Image (cartoon, rainbow, N blue to C red; front, side, top):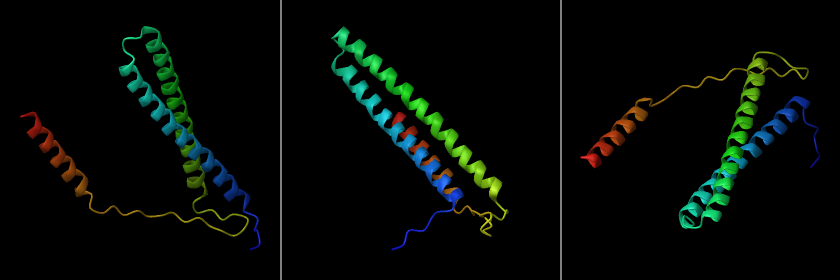
Length: 126
């Protein structure tokens, strides 16, 4: 199978989205480690020295979580902006990106589900 060279625009988009994907995986990793720290805090509540180490680890993971969240959000916004700017324009290869139309279906389902969940919570509180 012959290897075709990617359009530079497409290659840049793929690389950028790969970086965003990596940031999203890091977010999940930081969240997992932060939750693990919380369970360790509960187990080591009597050991003050160990508890302090765990609190520092938790703070580090939360900090990493928010940093990766910020970076991935910025990256996704940049990609959306780049694609929005490209809609309706023809590139050097003669390719024109058309806008997409998304039709929402069953929008009532979300409000029905919310109502049923709130009713369930109310019944539990009674």
